[in-house]
Length: 175
Image (cartoon, rainbow, N blue to C red):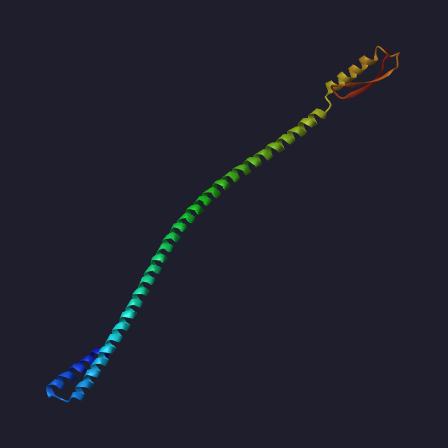
């Protein structure tokens, strides 16, 4: 560096001054130059120390930032694991719900089929019961004739309902 070269020059100048026994002016000039070099050296040393302190401060800040970033990465990793676990649980719940929905849909279809069968059977039963049964017709006619036979002479009108086949008869009764 320049400061050390200057110190070397001053030292050589002092040696030459001592060796040659030169004038006092030259000695003062060299001593003044020596003082300047020492001042510059001290200023340079102070500047270097200041820069070193600034560098150390920056290194501490960078190290703290790095530690903070590592902590954030760690927390992010933990949060990511929690989210992945939650996502997996939600996926499993979704699978269970889909299976349950599928089962309920099947049961609903089965119930619809049963309902359709019941409606069909009810129609068949209704059709079967609305068909006039010949024996019921015969019983109704016989009942009607029996009711009319003893009172052919008395003509009071009355209505009777035959329960077997919904047959209505008008006959005469005397009281």
